[in-house]
Length: 400
Image (tube, rainbow, N blue to C red):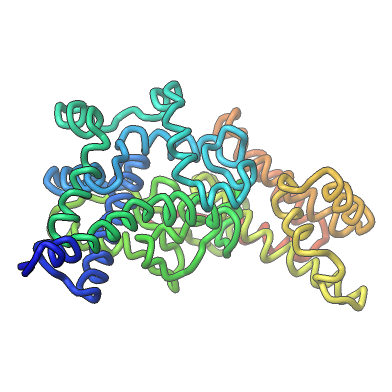
């Protein structure tokens, strides 16, 4: 207990020292991160997991208390991000807003997106709409953080106010800034998705597993973000713990891919696997066909690959140059046109992407197009293409 008014103003009722305050801050900010990644993101926005009503309501309360974010609005803004990713309509795309804006003003972009009520109505369906949500969490959205400020001052004094200020900046910086910004700007990619999403680190611990952002964009509805044996998603570990306690039910995870040997032609199993793993198919093409061919070109020219073709232009080969400016795109096209073998591989990649992404045809026609592509690839005389086509034909989903 404080010995004087000065002690109370400095340390509140509990008189925590700085080590205890740092521990408190670590715990509460991580609970907030888990609230966002487990409940708002994986459960509400993507329906990958359901939680026991007690756990779900704790998350709703904690979100109201520490962020003032409304579940329906958060889910709607995030769903729109996936639906309009890397377009001018994306609420927080670094490609259009600029990396500096998204990284440092992510909270402002969120507040701006909240004002688009038509989008909230369109993308915000299926979120909680009970009396508590309407009356308290939505009707008095800012009351929670005001209450938290009062409690923080009462318990910890000026230190509590400082901790509260850090809590208020935690999600805007780490989630809205780092994940939405750097997660579309820097890192490694397991999957050649049609956006710029990246994984920031394979061991996703600090931001609840959200660091595996490229994996998430490849399989948005999956409750598990780690897709490689050497990756770790702490959010998934928390879900498995809650599942063991019968407090969570996993609804969706990314299906595992199998490759069957000696398949003569793509079949229904192949097509089903490619619908789920089309980004993996494009990644395999980039790693097993294009990358070796580029290295061979560099070796034949007696130059290092980065000198023969800058990294930015190499990335343009695997994403159709969609993020290049007009001059860079023309430069890349001229470079490809001057190398017939590379041009052939790029054309085959574009044809395969068209087959995999076509949604306007039925399954039978899509399968026929896939079979025709594989037959042409095997008849091309290009060994890398032939080997890739042989592997592609054997794609299948592993039994759950």
